[in-house]
Length: 124
Image 1 (cartoon, rainbow, N blue to C red):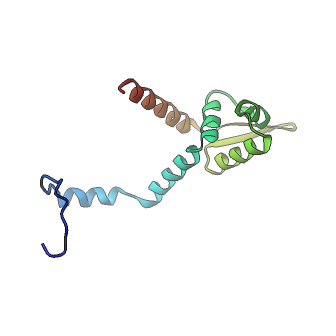
Image 2: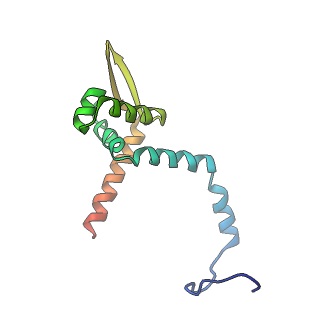
Image 3: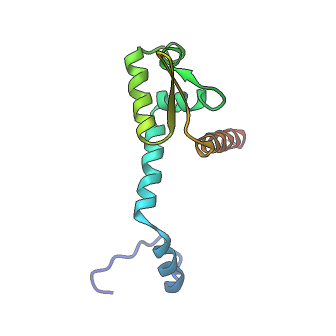
């Protein structure tokens, strides 16, 4: 087989060139990168906490900072990152700015992730 090294742990080669070619074409790099960026944004514990808190209500940056035990500047920084990723949105009411989730997709993602986490822990 020339210079090719085959890992001995494989039982046999089971490739289907037609299937793998079709599946390879379904990987749209722009979409994969976009999804990766959303998960990266939510991978920070404080940003995940913010998204979790905003599932059912809107909150101002001060309330978020108190709940997280961080400075207003830190909470604002996380909210800015979430807003840049279209995870949250904001609305002004006088001098106050209130944040909420941008749409139901993020709430669904949080709910499904939590369900998966609970199910995984139940089986361990």
